[in-house]
Length: 213
Length: 204
Image 1 (cartoon, rainbow over the protein chains, first blue to last red):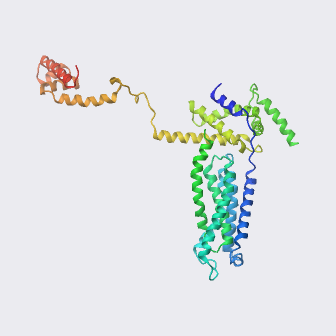
Image 2: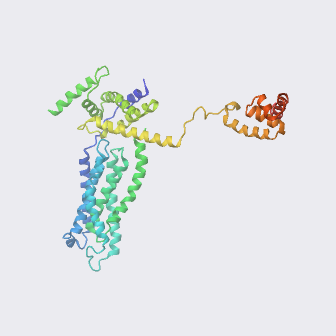
Image 3: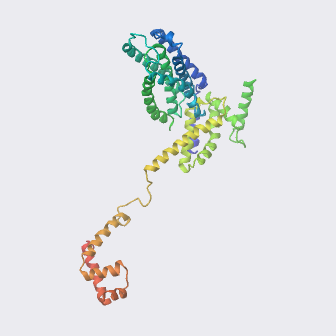
């Protein structure tokens, strides 16, 4: 028997049944649901930002808000699709339009007074709370997303990790925009790049080894 | 309706994929075999892996892999299929899934090999070296330096004789014409020079 035949015999011997991966869109929908719920819980705990009524009438607030949520949703779907070997890599482009909407907020944020900060708003105190909101939201979402994506034992660990982190960053900013006055969309993205880099580096090592012989 | 069609197809597939079958099972049957394998059917799995091996070999061949590398690549692809078999969706065709997985692993292998060949040089017979002096050609090149130095240290007449007769490979007659010395005296000079060189280089 040749080495290859031997291997086939060994692999099929006592073959255990496996739990088939559900459709990527369904897995993405489950996680998007979880992330949205997490945002709602954070808003309930922290309360809406002080100027929410005014904001909801301002397109410069609403467009980045919608963009951030859509970035989260499309990037999540793209991550689940790209993690599968036989799906197109072009899925990675899906979040681009949503990202374009979202980053209009970054630009507006740079103009500092794009939205009137209520007089005497406790900005410094809010900054600390704002940071914890971002960290809480991001950590909670990563904690659920990472094991879900790892189930795919993907052959494309880098693309999957970047898309996953983009999804987390998008949703974390949705929470942030709803709760806090301080403009920090870029900060949210930057904060999420740290775990992203770590995951990509570790995933690059572990992921490749996991599927290698 | 759909499920009964599927189980018919599965029976068909098993019959078609028996080792003594004369034709290769059609692609849709691979998909059925994989679906059954996911459920823990070892026989279907073995049939499937056996059936896809020639395809993997031809794919590896197309990637320019040969010899032991080819069989390694095939086994690597089979192992990867095994590790991620839960990610196959039986509603989708099997061949593109298999091709994507195998191609990915083979490209990885090629990339690794390219990186290696950029850094490493394979040992050839020329690189191998043994204790016997005769096999160490690099050492011999070093000896040439010593020899030239020894020749330079010879008395004028002997040096000229060695240079002309041994290094430039002139005939006795040519050397005699060039120096004006008789052939006999040249012979004597060369003989003495060689003797002296032997002594200088520590031989004989």
